[in-house]
Length: 220
Image 1 (cartoon, rainbow, N blue to C red):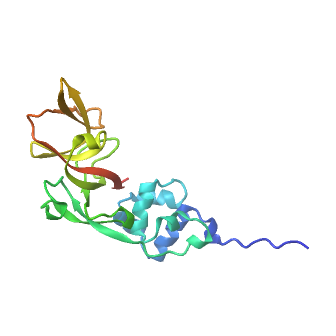
Image 2: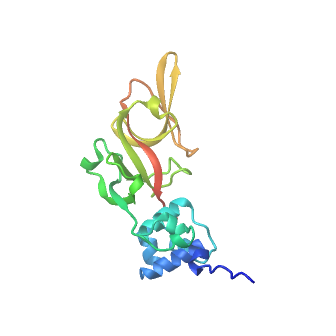
Image 3: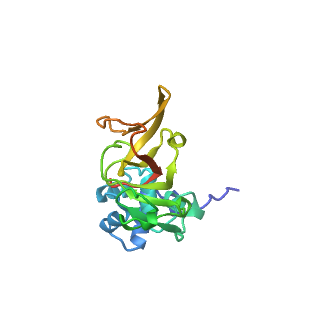
């Protein structure tokens, strides 16, 4: 007797682009609206939906939030993953400049920014970058997640991208520490090769205010 073939749901074999398009239409959103809400370029969304481009994880993050859909469902993992569920997010302060004190008390707060629940912590905040010193790693307009760690010792963040205050002025740089003639020298470097390293000796007022955890939003 010939065995019957298993019935495969059309949704189970959907591409990521088709799944994004279907969910967008379920929410009655245009590509322009989705682009505005996610921060992803409309032309790139169009290419994704037509399976002409593959979204990176950070793009999936942004689209998942805008579509109110878990990342696993958006990417697809079989029949059981194709029923959209409410996406749990938490809001963090979004700042336009590195704060000199607790983020919640900063006058630089622009708005609240939603992040996925597992990315939220009471001592985290979001920072919108304005300069190109960290390109190509980070670009102007990027929103990064920062762990507020006032006055953490530079030796403990060796090589990390940090939100710093140098002579009371904010700067975002990669922090390294070297010892020269028995004296500690802090070096602040940008990933942009055109950015000149900054040497910080004991005569300057310096503190690490936060550690960049990850990129959470980028315009494409």
